[in-house]
Structure formats: structure tokens, C-alpha cells
Length: 396
Image (tube, rainbow, N blue to C red):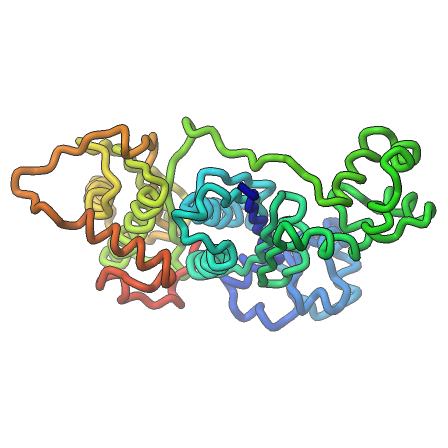
């Protein structure tokens, strides 16, 4: 079976997260950083038109664009958004490798049949879900290897998708400059250019032995193989023993309205349960996290009587934990629901209650999951979850 690997790269990640929180920054030049002696961590596209880019000294960025808006980094929030994005990837397959806070490799090979068999449709669904839940754009590259998928995502930027099929690899790869190859930096590119090797085609048409003499045995052999699209590295999956599933929501404005908080706990329980069902997992351990306006965070954990993947079960326990906090109009910034110590559903037995109908919520939720997978995240929702103003929430 031909491997199908996706590389997902968040576009201007830190800047995109800040623009999700502050929409007024979308159309003006801005960058995340700001320390007088520091560097630009991420710049939005209006700022890039002035020549501002990641790694540039902040002082130079200000000289290039005196009117640029500067946002100091909030790494806690960026990590929370990255965790939320990872949860989305986990609904596709357990073969997910986070390469950094803002990029990941996903091996879709074994998941294609379950997900409908069309890698492009799956990639577009993933992009839509990241935007819907996290309000940040991403670019997706799809190819037969990690190397090709990463190159494809770079070509797809910004906010796009590109698939390179196995039979298209050489035509896609060979016109690229040598510094497009993974691991070829400025120094190596300079050495290759001095040898008259400017494109990947030039590398491919140079013998392996010649490249090894010029660059060393290991690097020369690696570049020769990559020039022909040969890359057998696997996507490194997370240890299943460490696996958990969750989601969290940051309110655009702190709230002490318990009905609003309860609605979002239901949304997080629903999202978390659907992610368990997508992975064929169940759990008994429910963890509720609540972050207050002063950024204090507390967590409470409860254990259900039986393993479950049903939204109502998860929500009921999360609300029981919330009620035990006995909050008195405390202003809340973020809520989250997580299921821990997941086990495969096929390894558990669920005893139905005597008054439980032969068909009920479990069947309904599976039908909802199929509709969402085919038609998108808003295809079917609980009525209570449709009564929400998106402008009041920041997905994280």
C-alpha cells in the first residue's frame, strides 16, 4: 500500500493566535515579540510585506515599519491552542507526530478507508475543523512520504492544500532549488551552488559518489536519495499508555454566568466524547479544568462507574465536578474537559441499564459522527449548542 502522509503547518502561528483574540489586528502590520533587544517570533502577512520576518531583531522590524503593532507573547495560550489542534489530529488516527508547537505529520495510510478514502477531502475537512475550533489557518501538504508532504505544505502556503501523488513526485521535486530540501541550509546551498548544482534535478543527475566526496558520506547519500524522493522515515506515534483526549474553550470575555459556563462544558464534553468515538476508545476518568480571570487554574477529577464514550455521561460527571467547586459568581476565563486512561472499546463490556432502550443515544451519536465527518463540523449539533455567539469565544 502506498503511504499517504500529511504535513500540517500552522500559518504564522503566534500571530494567527493573537489575531484570533484581537480581530482588529488582522488588517494591520503586526508581529509577536516586542522586547527591545529581542527578535520577531511571528509576523502576520501585512507585516511581511514590509520585509518583517521571524528571527529578525525587533528594533529592525520597527525601523522597517514604524507603525507596526507589537504584541508580547503569551506562550501559555499558544500551548493551549496547540494542544487543541493536536486533539483534532488525534480524531483522524493515532499516527500523529508533533514536529513542533505549530506543525505535525499525520500518517493517513491505514485511516483512509474509515475516513472515506479521499486524502484531499480529509485534508480540507481537517483545515476547516482547525479554523472552526481554533480560529487559526493552516496549510496542508499530502504526499507519499514525510519529505514530500512537508515540501507540499510549504508550496500550499498560505492557508492552502496541495497533494503530490507518488507518480507526480519527480515532476514536483526536480524544478525546486536545492535549498528547498530538508536540512539544506545557507552554507550547504552555497557549496552546492559553487559546484553548479542549483536545482534538485541537478542533484539527482549527479552521482551518489560525487555528492559523498563533496559533502561527506552520510549527507551526500541522504541528499541523493531525497533528490529522487526516497524517504522511508515513519511518522512517530505517541505511546498509547500516555493517551488521553480532551478539549478546552477560552471565553472572549470572562464570565460569571453559570448557564454560559454549563453550555461550554457541554460543548467540550461533546467534542471530547466524539474524539473518543473516532478513535474507538472509552474511558472512566473525567477531568474538569477551570481557569479564572486571574489566570489561576484548578482541576478536579472523577471516576465513572463504567467505561463510556457517550457525551451525556461525560457531561454529567463534568457538571458534578463543577458543582462541587461551590463557586460564588467567580469570573471564569476558560473551561476544559478531558478523558484519561483511555482503553480500546473492544476490550470493555458495557452493561446496559434495565430501563435503557434497545437503541438510544449511542446510536444517535454514531450517526451524528458520520454526518459531521462527511459534511463538516456544523452538520448536526445539539440544539443547546447552536445558541452561541461565536464572537464571545476564543477556541483554544
